Length: 154
Image 1 (cartoon, helix red, strand yellow):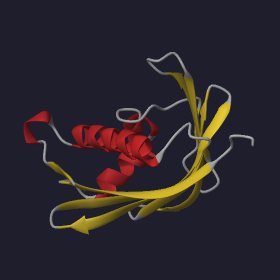
Image 2 (tube, one colour):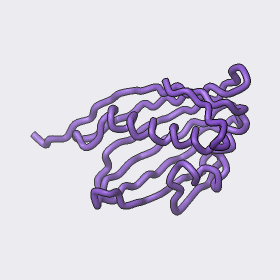
Image 3 (cartoon, one colour):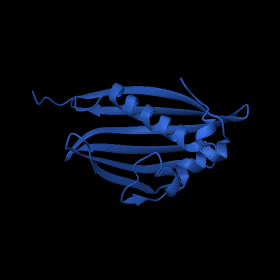
């Protein structure tokens, strides 16, 4: 027995931001804006077929690598990308994620759906969902002036 395994799972995160869909989209598409809430690394090529690549050392001393390819981009409507995560030199997951921006009232409903293959027990859906929620909370904090923070976690 090799000890190898694959666990497939999906999660959906629903957020509301009190700004327009184009404003939320720009926070994903513009490298300076994205760097305010997501660790931008060595490469950020935001176009269909473009790559986003970063490596960093976590507080636990391990190196994490994020390697994404943009599969579909419809400005202010959706972004679909696939990505792999490595821990040190070991692949821990491969995912497909879609981000939808929907006008809702005076703001935007963001729906992020991720379908992942989590490898060899080194990562799991609850850890990934938790980390993604932290990033989307940080996104919400960057979208509005401090005096008018208004986004809803679901």
